[in-house]
Amino acid sequence: MSNLSNFFQSSKMEIMMAGYLDIGSEWKYMVNDFLYVRLYYIRSGSARLTLTNGTLDLEEGYLYFIPAFSILSGACEQQMGHYFIHIIPDLFSEHFFKVLSPKHRCKLDVQTADYLFRTVIFNHEARTLSAEMATDSALKLIFSYFFAGLDTTVTQNNFNRFVKVFNYIDEHIQEKIRISDLSALVYADDAYFSNLFKKTFGISLQKYILDKRMDRAKSMLATEMTISEIANQLNFFDAASFTNFFKKQAGMTPKDFRHKLFSERAN
Image (cartoon, rainbow, N blue to C red; front, side):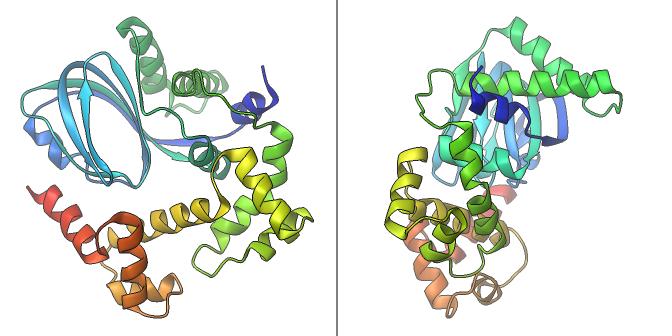
């Protein structure tokens, strides 16, 4: 087992809900909270998700990883039997998913899916040591399928080195973050630090920060906060500046995103 795998095994993910449902058209009223990471296994039937970056068909016999802040709505025209797990990842897991970009679907035989999901469903609310160990092991095994074949040179030492950076970004995402503020955390000059981040995680530091700010903006747009209030919270000069930023990243204005989010849920 690699150092990074050991590190991931030590992470904690809070399960908010887990179960199995045979569902029909009413499913569209049950998928509208997009703040959680979702795991789905489709045991029978099919459905479709509308995501912030397109649509995703859910097919029988497949396991799905749905990132937080990505679901706008769901539609099930006939019937679908599916396992589901809704998760709030800890800080490490959240960054792990963001920088390593796991697959979003993979084939899984029904016997294995039944065993893993039922283990989580039957044990996740218990407070005994054996139940907690069974839940954690089954959940990590489910996630392992999404990382199958992933080619990465990330090591535990590399990730450890950036923990302070990730924490700083999370704590200051509503402010202007300078590379010099981050590079100082790992005692490196700006250019070396930026190159090391890109080499280690395969994503530029600027893109990572933009993605995190977009996640925060989307979560705020799912509330009753005004566009001006969100712009102020995220430290933009004004609502127009925030609108330009959001449109450049998402391809639509915050107002259009909010309208799409709530209109999709209402239909």
